[in-house]
Length: 70
Length: 494
Picture 1 (cartoon, each protein chain N blue to C red):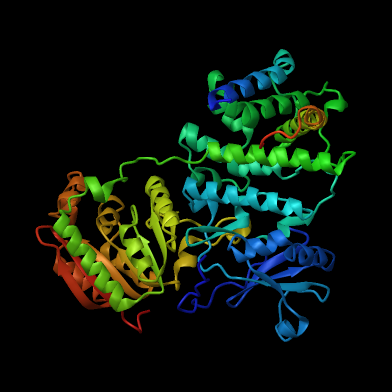
Picture 2 (picture 1 turned 120 degrees about the vertical axis):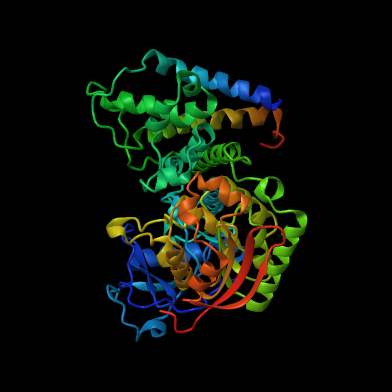
């Protein structure tokens, strides 16, 4: 996959993750948010997503054998 | 890579008592004479010992990436009275970095190198069961052009099933967001860290970016999504299930936790590679090669004089003021000096670092304007020393080549003041280039106020210098209204 295509794929996947948030995007802040909360929450979401692919990868590896490189 | 060079002269005494670091409950760093010591609480000392003996730590110390640290035995420091040191503390000694520098003085390239080192060391430590509890550029100092991680207490034992890197947000705020802001908005580390210890918030970049940029790939993960998620959690009606918990949340499998962290670190690595500062151009880049008024002969004459001066002085440490792209800093470094090269332009400082790094030369480029040098910062203005306090007593030689006219004309610093500062900055030699008012560059920057400098002649300059220095040799540059001088500081100079 070329770099261009990989970027496109990444953008599409992110878009899919984005959609539910887009639908609920807020207009204003109402309360105090501790700095770093947003990035931390993002990391939690990212970890959950990646954690999901953990089992998926193991499954895939079982069927098509060892994937070349990362 | 380079051995630690001790400053050649003792620091002038009369400075305040050594300041102890305080943010980390596990221990505190302080200076004792010329030694850097760390007092560590008993509970944390065992973990620190364990970390320092891991394969990753030992490799990092050997390759000059992690500060060399040894645990001192009680009889090695028993007779030393250290205020604040408690009997239950364990004492470690660290290799000393001869010229500390801070993110607010770094060109973007150094911030990037520091970020890469942080990520790489964390990735290495993970394999040995250790994590990184904070990720800030203040953990790093530079030895010449090489970053060195100095805050060993940042490494802590990690719970193997923990998939969260609590310091990730800080890594983003202090490394990735400033680098992104540099690339997108031309913001420099100086603009960020002079005001703030903890970097930039996603919210700030969000506000600076228009909608199109907010939705671009780099912004989405670093800025936009975190900002939106923070906004959602700020709503009073938000259910507590969406709330953020900073308490450990172990997963069911160590392998899975490790997988998540590895992917996160890979992502950080990719982002760092993506945000690597490219060669920038400014008014001052390509100066000596293309824009200056030196003919090749004159440049050769100048280089010869500088080489001979270095041969004579043999400085172990040198400060190059207005170093530009480092042509003369490199001459000093090749002669064997550890060089600090300062310039007020971040683009040339960055270019200098690229060259120094590529050629493994001991030159540390910093973005410092000598007429408005870095102030003391931090708690009680004592956590980060001012540039001048670090500089006084540290340099065998100071070079002021093709720079004094900028200080005299643009910054209106009086000649006597300039030379008095030079006399304080150097412990030995001053290599200085006099630029006469009839010089082409001088005339370009004087902006119609020649009358202010009509008395500035070589004779006046030499008389003013004689107040502090003895002349060793001089060389007028043929065809230019410039003259090079090598001076020696008079020994009983106040």
